[in-house]
Image 1 (cartoon, one colour):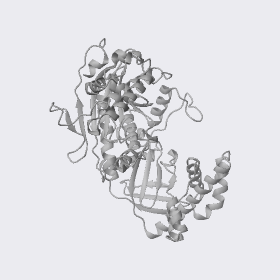
Image 2 (spheres, one colour):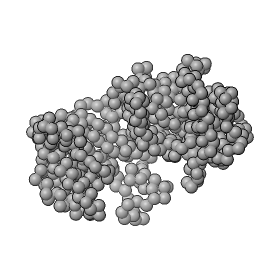
Image 3 (tube, rainbow, N blue to C red):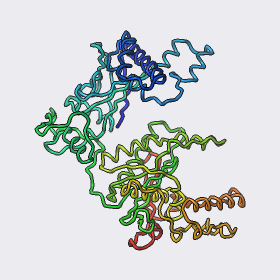
Image 4 (spheres, one colour):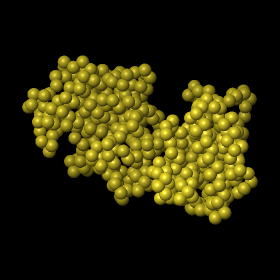
Length: 516
């Protein structure tokens, strides 16, 4: 799903009507949340009817009440203060008035999209996308929208064309200043001549083995012909024709706040055997997003990084992109506020959403795997910088899960493939702390031995002389090839892409030789 946010302007009367509707909508959300906390088995249909009868004096209709109940049912099961706990304490101290407190409790009003109602029951976009009319119980409110350029402008004008064909649904969400449109980006795919979006969806359901909701199509079903022919139908600006996927290839992504590792891996043998892995390419993206960057600038840099990953997959005919999951649970609470800000507030969800959308539009699948021990295994086996080495192991796990859903995340342990980088190996050998990898029986024990040696080395050396077991990150000044460093975006956009040179050989040689 993709969301486009547009600022809007409305008249004073329109603002007052919107405020009244949002007050009723927010009251239903709060009441439904409390009712579902008391009795989670309450039928949503019964709850919607009861709350609508109670708050219908605010002017909203039954569908908006239904949307409010669904929003309350999706809220997390934890203590929630509508309006914010900080603002509630300020209200208790008399720092803000009752009117200001009620304004802070106003929630954005959501209208879920419906295909049969030209995309939505209440919102209508004009042909040029400059005006949006919100109508509830025959009471219209006109919203004036600015002229949008770029990708968002193309998407808005495309939605105004395809919505009357009753094939797409558009969810609208309105707050104090912006109108948010959410739709399925695959509804703007390129259709074959003579094909409709309904038939394309049915074909995808049959290919995936899933069953469509509701009553099935009869043998004589004929899909309604849209008003807009397939040749004149707008296409998503980021849509790309699918490329044939080579078997056994995957792009692994290791996400970090400052660095993103991309590695193209090939394994046409046993995915759990590291000796069958072959590194084809490795890219390291440095984000270099300043701390004072705006949300739009951060979103643009991360979107360009996601686009580079999709282009890399298409260049090597890889039909799968794999990254680790569980990053949303990472939190830092150290005394270093810079580290806390870097780890806690980087846009991990932004790049994941952008990558999923762009990969779907390019015909590339996206999967996630657990990230446990991926950095240790990658740095011990693949002679690549830390992010790219971890990305190689993540790509291997993606291929293993694609071939067998019940496959474990750890590869087969082979001490002959473990080769730490020379600086850490020499330092550990001098102190007599280098683990004996031949006596270790699994990657979990190997990880424990490496961590124990790393802690001992850290205590024996000064802070400026410490050496980690992870392979050092590349620097633009260290790369000798003139083609190895390119900009991530335009000349003023932060970020660089460093192409790590790799040497590829035959499949019967160890994987570490391909990465050298």
